[in-house]
Amino acid sequence: MKDESTGKFSVHLSFEEVRLPPFEDILILGKKCPQGKIGVYKSFELLIPNEFETFEIEDEIIEAIFVNKRILKKIDKNKIITILREKVFPYVSASEILKVDFKLRIFYDSVKGEF
Image (cartoon, rainbow, N blue to C red; front, top):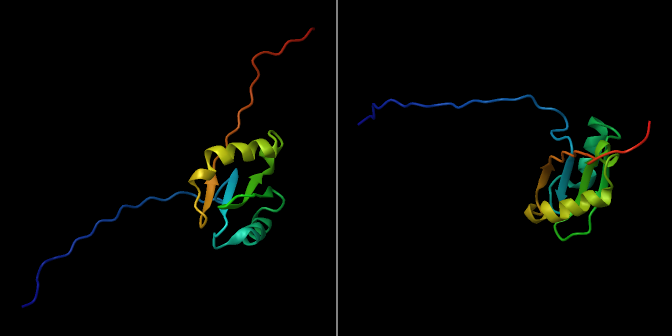
């Protein structure tokens, strides 16, 4: 006996513009990520040459981080690594690449001087 029921389907669709690279601030590479540090570095040099600085990390899980040079003009790399080590590294697995939005705002309480 042939089933004469009708099938139905539903599609939920969304899309957005993609920019290359698909992140702007910081990228964290796990030690076992398939692309590897050299592969990611070469990709960056093709897509956006001389825009990111690479730092090797001494950690069980993290191999390296890529930091946008515009951030490094505002804050020291060691301070960035300290923040990432405390707030982000605990959530990274060895096989992944993690994108970090690092929005830095610098402010002063007061600036005094004479005219």
